[in-house]
Amino acid sequence: GYRVHEQENTQSTDFHRWMRILLWVVLILFSIVSTKIVHYSSMAYFPITYLGSYGLYLWWNGKRQISKSIRVMLILVASFWAMIVIGIVITGRYAKAIIASEKIADPFAMANLEAQVHWSGWEMLIGLIFIGVVLFAVLNLKHKKKALASLLLGTVFFTYTTMVFIVPKIEAYSQRAVIEFLQEIKGENAGVITYGYKSFAHLFYFQKPYEQNIRDNTQLLNSDLNRRLYVITKIHKAALFEKKYPTFERLYDKNGFVFYLKNPENDQ
Image 1 (cartoon, rainbow, N blue to C red):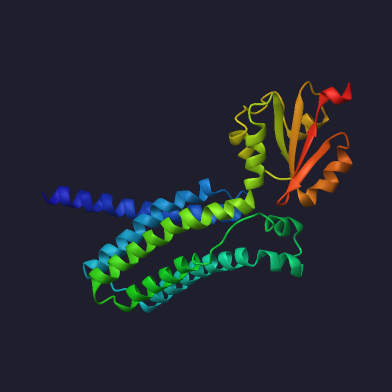
Image 2 (cartoon, helix red, strand yellow):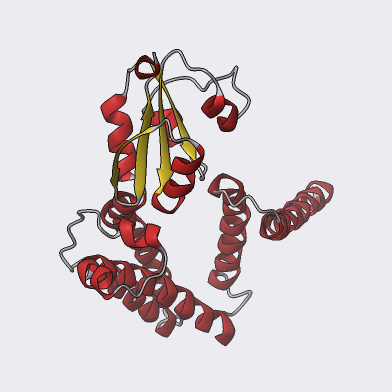
């Protein structure tokens, strides 16, 4: 029985060590590399969840106290995310005034704000409720059930409501114009590529396989085509694209994106 217990403790210690190693590898490695993709950084979710749960386990069983620094960090992190949500809502509500002020130097960001997105204003309550719940939990750590329930339920509330009510509206600014365009031309016997930025949206929403016989977009742009080719770029890349590829017809631009077409039938 002693050997089994000792073996379990060793395995538990090894697992804990590997979780810490995994977290630091992800944090350091993907802070260095230039590719910033959520699929990579999400590898940190597992060790973060484990270490957070382990810390709560120690606190719940009286083996460790939540220090003042951790309390301050909880409040600061909650405030940070709450202010992001509130800031997004305020920006959306006053988008026209921001555009009119011309204080944003980035033309793509300014064009993004032209998207028609309805903000009621109540969405700010998501951030306010979240910071309120975290403050309640931090101030009631002596009552462990109340504090833990508040912290967990508050986190679930914030995550769920943000995903349902905030993220879709952010998507309307960031790429809805592109998705609508791709859905309109879906099924056509044509090719679709991006110019000046990377995206997987056209591979998914256009529902066409990637051109395996084409090594890169530049080769496709310069090749003789036997079918239509659509090109999507951002507004600050449009002038350069039109200069390099004048045979493409500019269809329209919307919310910071510009859409082009080259039809081989027009070249004949």
